[in-house]
Image 1: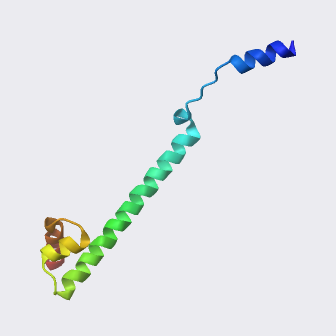
Image 2: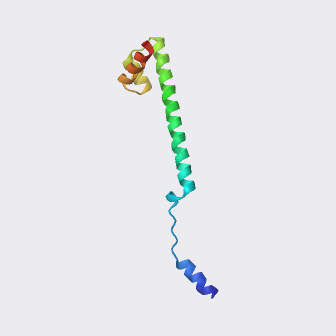
Length: 84
C-alpha cells in the first residue's frame, strides 16, 4: 500500500497560486506603501535641491532642469511657489 500511495503522490500535480496568499498580499501592500513613501521622500529632496540652486542664483531654470534631470516647467513651478 505504501508504494501505491507514494506513486500517487508523485504523480499528483500540486499547484499553489502564491499571488492569492494573504501573507503575499499583505507583503505586497506594505511594499507598495514603502515604495510610495520613498518616492515622495526622493521628490521632496529633489525639490529642496532645486530650491537651493535657485537660491544660489548662478543658474537659470534651464540649467537647473538639466542638472536635476527634471522639466523646466517643474523648476518654474517650484520657483513660483518660492516667490509666493
